[in-house]
Image (cartoon, rainbow over all chains, first blue to last red; front, top):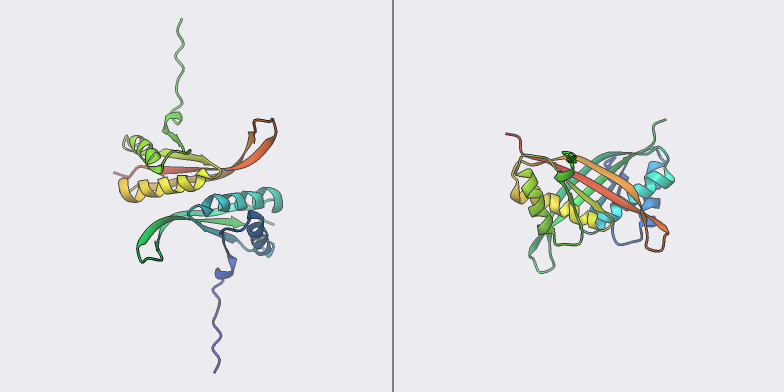
Length: 100
Length: 100
């Protein structure tokens, strides 16, 4: 018997912002938002500034009429390689597709 | 005749996040929020990550019961020293004092 894991609908609408150049994330987010779905940009620590850049580039230059949805600020606990724990700030920015 | 300039009420409830250590801004914001006034953290470019850190430190470690108000993401135009113009992302985070 084969069990097919159901993908949660929101799982594929997230873009994790990391160390690549901003334009990589802009394009990844455009693919989602062009299907008329909201996209969520997730970032931690220093990548938060980049997430804001990505959101603004997307909204001002690529997707006319896109709007901000939820903006969530939080703290996450990360386990370091040596087993100690650190707190790191996290942010989630939701961008809604243009209303038709 | 002496004209006294009226200070706008919101002018003194802003904390501009720059290159100092986070704790400087945490303390500056605490002074405002301890007077039971909302405080606004303003940051541009790479300082945005620090603004989020300051907000989380303030909310989780110093001011129990503080909540987020408005979070505004925007783009500002900056004139460089050579006269050219650049766009930079900006963020404003409002933190509300605990309800009594």
